Length: 176
Image 1 (cartoon, one colour):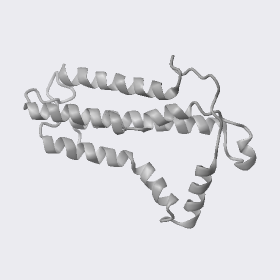
Image 2 (tube, rainbow, N blue to C red; image 1 turned 45 degrees about the vertical axis):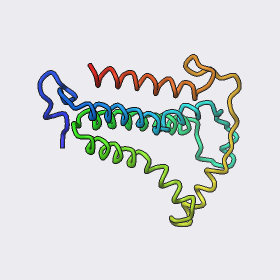
Image 3 (cartoon, one colour; image 1 turned 135 degrees about the horizontal axis):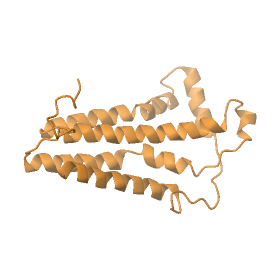
């Protein structure tokens, strides 16, 4: 089903033109909660503070620097896509229940990777996956010294700036 195909001319996002105050409040609340619970952006930026150490290849021969950066970049991209999809589902609904059902579904799907890791770590999946999660949790790397990321003293602050920017963009798009 293509949500954007039914949009009237001049209203590309198919935002309902006239909505009840409780729908507007629900949309704003759902957008705020989306920003708060989306940890992938902040966590991926935090991990850019961790120094990739070539010594890790002695223990894990397939560990490469490009894989390290690709993993962080894909996690960041997943967080961005989660927020974009959540935004579309939230603003295109004019029913409070539908807003929260769609929001919950998108959040569940975006957390499936963390849920899978948690289940494997608890030993509820085949033995090989349990061992891999134990290895992953056991890897320790050093933080970079004196890092400045996007004009900030740390990546976590940059993640918060990205989320604040998204909230402002959401508010502008939703209420313009």
